[in-house]
Image 1 (tube, rainbow, N blue to C red):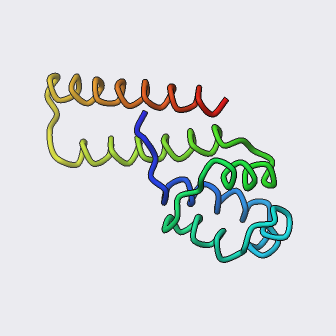
Image 2: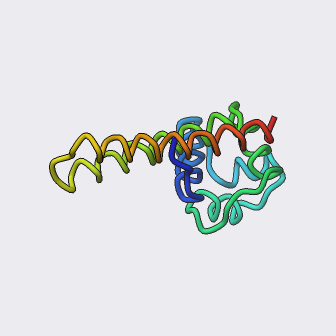
Length: 116
């Protein structure tokens, strides 16, 4: 699975916040985080560290792992579409892409294990 960027994690958090029908200020009041920090995390200009991500996820009724997986899946889909748009794929191309994704998935699983 592709490793998500800060922008992808932020977009996943923003989608969950908007689905909950709350504003960044509301989320800030719940978590004790500044609404401006929440906005920067959602925009991907600041990567949410462990405690920040955990606080945001808890307030949104989810887990950091679920948000990271969602963001990684979106990235993997985008990368697959780009590979397909580059032209006809050979079996060798598909195997290389599969191997690259498998290596990324292993690193992702190791990171999730560290998170708990």
